[in-house]
Length: 135
Image 1 (cartoon, helix red, strand yellow):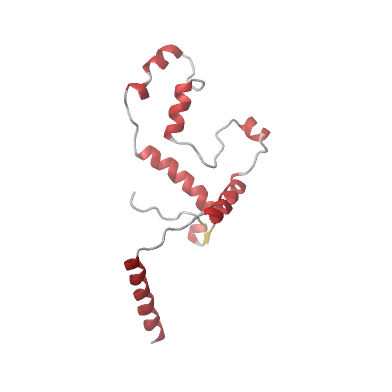
Image 2: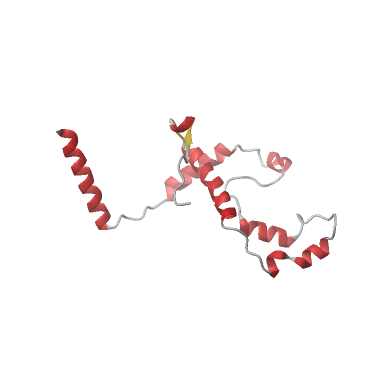
């Protein structure tokens, strides 16, 4: 998609939450990974693993499954472990993890400077708006 709106918005856009923004970003990242589609080749088809596991078997413990699942999408904040494992690790709520992510982003992010022509155009727009508002 060219544009995604509503990220971080709650209450039909009346409230914006930084925590909701980073959680929404993770959800969009997940969704876009699937929109891109799957690569199909001998490695991704894994016929050798299918034959090894056989009918009625489970692929979840196979190294190939874990490798390719992580290539597909690896969450940055969501916990993909079992409920029991999540509890053993302290059962941290997602909004708490999101809040820590926000602090990390604010502490480390270094924005790219705007190109000079863009900065000049923004200044013109602001001056024009100020002039119109004062009239």
